[in-house]
Amino acid sequence: MNEELKHTESTSEQTQQEQKQWGKRPPEGSEHHLLKGPRLRRQELYTTIKIFIEFIRGFRRLHFIGPCVTVFGSARFDENHKYYKMAQDMGERLAKAGFAVMTGGGPGIMEAANRGARQGGGLSLGCNIELPMEQHPNPYLDRYIDFNYFFVRKVMLVKYSDAFVVMPGGFGTLDEVFETAVLIQTGKIEKFPIIIMGREFWEPMREFIDRSLIEGGTISPEDLDLIHVTDDPDEAIAIIAEAQARRNGK
Image (cartoon, rainbow, N blue to C red; front, side, top):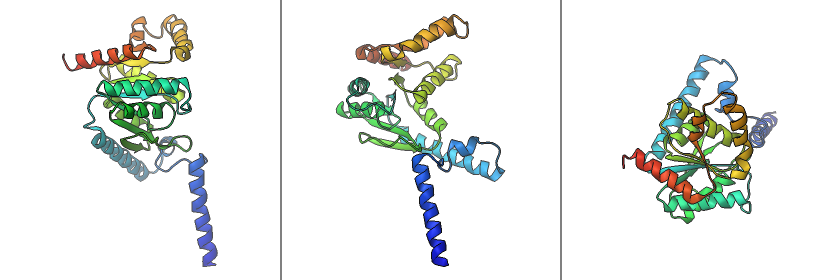
């Protein structure tokens, strides 16, 4: 009887791990548990403490990284894709210009930028998020931090970045771009460059902004100045360097 109980418990634990791995069960301590509604107050306190610890861990790990640019983009491009190569080239150029390169730490565009940073002799950083599928650390990271909470990770990416370089991506990439634009627009953070690369990919979105948002009066024409669009890496580096010089009072 005891042996059967042990076997059942072992099988249950194995199933839970498999469910976590393949997305059938969210990991403990994730936003899923935090945001699904009211819980016992001691559970809310426990979660708040975990979030606090995650913030402190991020602050300690990233405090001394120096000038840094974060590169965003899809995790789904392989190394033969043109946008992977674009991100790799940009990562190398940023490193040679004296910037650490930070990404979400995963595959695809993130891997490409970290790989380029390594090639350029710069510091390669990853702020990874624990996801049930898709996300795993890429092999080109000098320093790596794992986060449970998207919003904690976002704070770290904004706080320690001198600029964002945004390559083609999906919902996560759009989330980062537009939330940061809102923070700048509303004066919650200082203005810093948000550079969109991959003009062909992003052109329909730019047309939507022009036709629907500006013509509809939901944003001001000057809000477009928050985002730079270019496929020229030299222009992107120049925009970032100029903004950094202004920030440093030079």
